[in-house]
Image: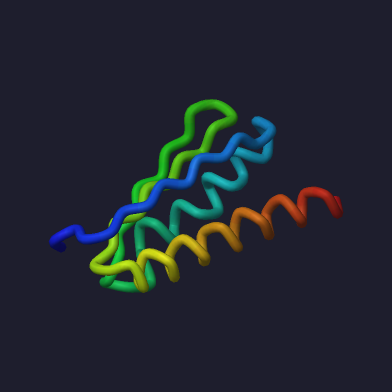
Amino acid sequence: MKNKARGVIETILPSNLSEVAFRAILPEIISGPDERHRGKLKRDGDIISLEIEAEDTVALRAALNSYLRWLKLICDINEIT
């Protein structure tokens, strides 16, 4: 894929939650629902870093929105329990 758009999300979560978020999002990164973007996921202690490379800004925005929603959902569920 010729990279035309790139975005990075970095967030700091409590250590127990960062492990959960990493393991929950990793399968989505590996299988990828779309051929228009690729992602890399890293975890360094409490920091989760997600890098998205996409064919265009529309695909980048869609991918970033999806991953941000998943991260928010994980945080919201953690607050409930």
